[in-house]
Image (cartoon, rainbow, N blue to C red):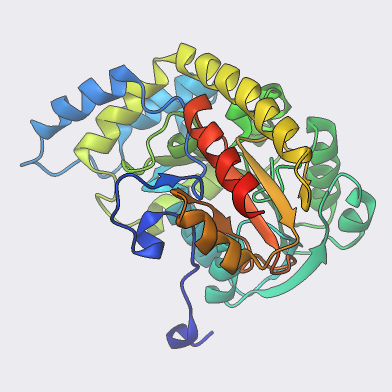
Amino acid sequence: MNHTSHTPVSHGGRHSMGIRNPRIVDFSTNINPAGIPNLAVSALYRGLGKAAEYPDARSADLVSALARYTGLGRAHILAGNGATEIIYNFCSSLISGRRVLVPAPTFAEYEAASRLAGCRITFLKTMSLADDLDLFISKIPAGGCVFVCNPNNPTGSMLSKRQISQIIITAAKHSCMVFVDECFIELTQSPKESVISMVKKYDNLFVLRSLTKSFGLAGVRVGYAAASKEAVRTLYNVKIPWSISCMAQEAGIAALRDRQHLTRSRKIIKTESEFLRNKMAKMPGIQCSPSSANFVLLKTRHDSAKLQKRLLQRGVLVRDCANFRGLGSNYIRVAVRSRRENLLLLRALEAVA
């Protein structure tokens, strides 16, 4: 691919919209409503004391903490500057030029990184991969790679461990990699549906995780992957040196010690997600998709860009989903936030939707 033709993916968030007003409540990014653990905040301050030093390029202490956290050996763990760095390194070093299968709609960086790596991409249009699993499996490309976001962004739909296993086992027979993005799975009510432990058995499995979502470290940038020892070695060889700062490494290690943070997060998300979906489902002109994640996809009778602007005038920013492949121009996505903030969203939707 000619890299000059690469277009960065546009995501949600204040910065993408040029919003500086601190009173605007951001529902466009799927951050953890429980915020950052106190242990991680303290660790960030400690990390400042190391700011004059280079960080450990291999993030050895962080990798050790992740190995303990996941129950995997250190050789199966790769740390990165957020999950997105790992997506691009995976594509450029492990599947460059291969055939790739991607569901649509899903997280757009899979397509962008695959194109940058010269991959040939096939899309399967589906709002629920569980409903189209057999068709998806039938399209697994020999010697290629399939991407699965579980739960899926932006739909919130989720596959079971058994269903993901079907994909992995069939793909292994076709020498095909399976990239499973589990960045949101720890915030669901079914975190045990994770396939992360299976990387010890299946060399074709690559699992992506992010402390951005699970531990509220969006601005700190800490992601990680679990994969075969060979895949981890390959990605370490292409990884940019010192990509994870001293502060990020310290915060990541500290956050992993606070297991109760995930329990608190899941409790908030369960309560507030049910509250939001029940209220929005009763609004005329809105179709509310079922979601296992900390966000909800809405189909409305309005143009999504116009609706986003009207809601912004009422103090809330939602995600215009028109740039998700497979979605039309009448979808928005909203994050699950605190009760006070969710009430603000509901009042804004009632006024304009």
